[in-house]
Image (tube, rainbow, N blue to C red):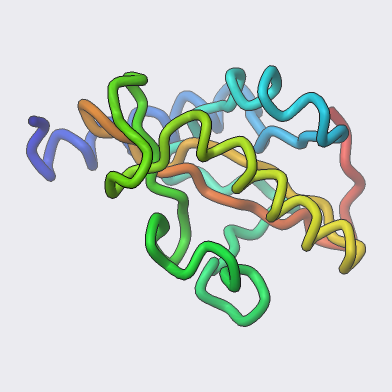
Length: 141
């Protein structure tokens, strides 16, 4: 298992690389493409691109169905190796797809555009941050 120091260093390295390459959170435009699109999620580490805001998933309305069970305040906790099982602490890929769909539906109902990116990576799991596109900025993908 990676130490906390190693995980922070990986986050910082990913952030520097993401900033240099101008990476943005992944915007999923079509609910039917979540399963394919989510496989291409960028790793932003601690980088928060201009025009995006990392959401607090504990805010009212975002987590009604998630019940805080598989997210920290800012990110979804996800198994990255494909070896996890439903019901464990980390979301499996099959659990991630409807969770992302649920969040997109809430956002669409509110007229908000969401983006998704890895914000923390460990040896066996990742944290997927949910970003909100700020109204003053356009969305390109």
